[in-house]
Image 1: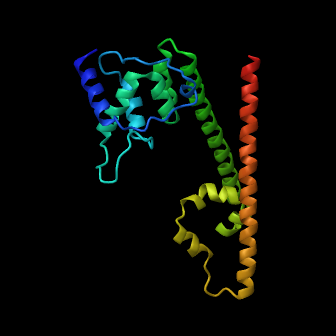
Image 2: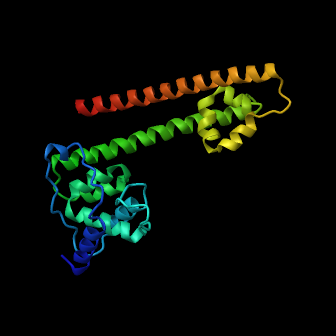
Image 3: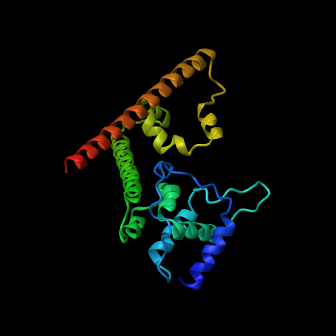
Length: 233
């Protein structure tokens, strides 16, 4: 092991001593595979990109008290690198949710254990689901564009009433509470109009909840279908 690797491991151990080591389902069963794995000497661009991606993600790298200064990106990278060098399995259990498809190439280079294979499949499954959701959103966006071109939507409010999920995905989620209130506020609105507006709001919320549930069910059905195809193969 190079002096650089030894220094990085020492720095990671010092900074990550009280890190919150999240225990994955397989390690809880006593899995120990992957321990003691070391990175090859020299900088590997694939590994460095993976480490930086994790360090810059929302992953919890180290527990800190309120009065402690935030860790720099380099400090986070040192901790993440130390975890990877110490145990591939621990690295996967803590950070698999933040890995990209190209990161799996690193783990495919070595002789994998059942536990590592499990997490690699979880990464692929998460990425596949994300692609499916993006595909659904893209199809809904294309539908919205066609409706706009055809003149089916005459206003933002009509769009929200006709397709609450489409509106939420492309407009609503980007509005802060104040902007949402401005859209619903009308100083000249009568009491009867206000009551009707509240009723319509409840209808829109119910329709949005139904659409979201229906979309989730469709994604689950696609996922189950993919799993059945994998088992058949």
